[in-house]
Length: 171
Image 1 (cartoon, rainbow, N blue to C red):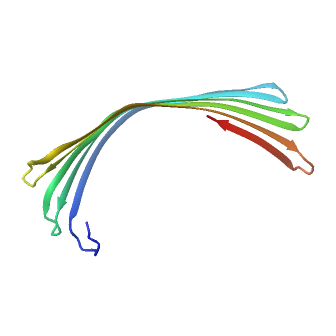
Image 2 (cartoon, rainbow, N blue to C red):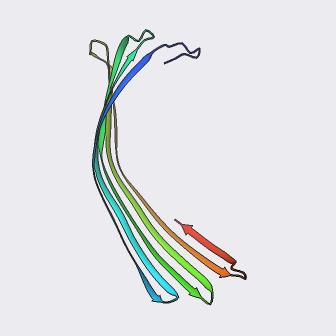
Image 3 (spheres, rainbow, N blue to C red):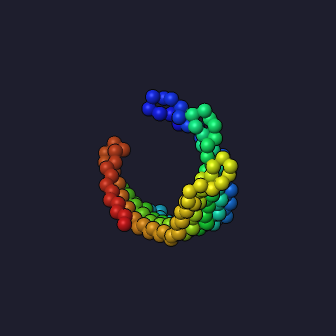
């Protein structure tokens, strides 16, 4: 650490060990169907799930300007997480007398369950705890759902020039 003049006023030496294990699974399936030579519909479904556990430890040795260790911070943190995501797409593409129309409808949902903790304790150089143990917990379930629809119209002009229009909304 340095003061505003650039002089060293303290030092920090930290070591972090992290252990993270997960079980991710993903899938995706889709299909297109040609109604006739000018009309195609399609569908795509995809998703994922992941259960994850983590545990982290940090030992941070703090020292004065002479780099002599004056205190130690020991932290442990970790958690359990479960993510589940799902999405779907339904699409249509049609051509009528040179006009091309495409429509896409999308659905997405994201779900996350969280159970986290963090503890930090300060110690002196004789390894005696000083001050209060700092504890932090976070538990929660989070859910997001998104709907979207998009329509595009492509109108051919002369000399291979096209004019396109589109609209999209999501909520």
